[in-house]
Image 1: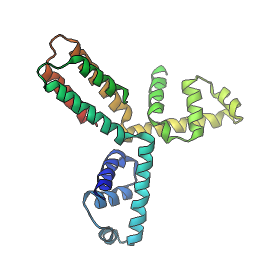
Image 2: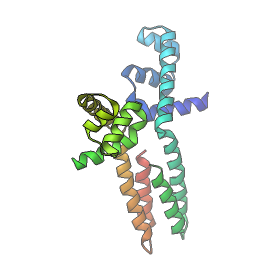
Image 3: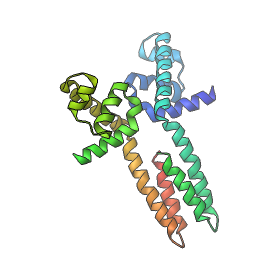
Image 4: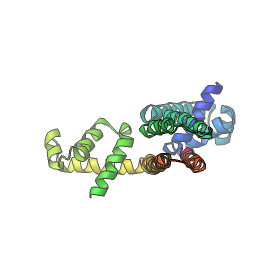
Length: 110
Length: 110
């Protein structure tokens, strides 16, 4: 569950601009502010089931966007490469060739 | 016109996965293969106006996605930073601090 929450937080971060205001409200209360379905239902004066359905649909949409655009996956790969570059730069005598190769990999990600 | 074509090529590249197969076909014939509206109309046995309307709507959609996700803009900014890093690495004594700062800027773009 924690893993799913982390993933949803990331996907929400990347694709929230493609959601409707209502989808954004429910998702942000549920995933960022840790509200329960019941609490969101009360807040918006709708049924718990309606909130549940909306959130499930939104989660599916976020996964569909990720399948098409891969923003989270690319972000993850870029982050790893950047960490690697920073480590190489910390060394006293950085091996420039290796850094150059890593930068080239970064460029290919776009 | 050339500038618009270049921009549309980029936007198409970034967001084509969010388009319908028909939108993709028209856009790719028009922008990548340089077909005229008349030639596309003939190919698909529809009116020139129908092709024109479809392409105009698709262009608007691509601009809307860019407004929301900024993939092209971020790609452009990242490319500039990567060019800068590569230039610094070419120097005999790269100033690591400056490279580290540039890498930090790259990280903030995600």
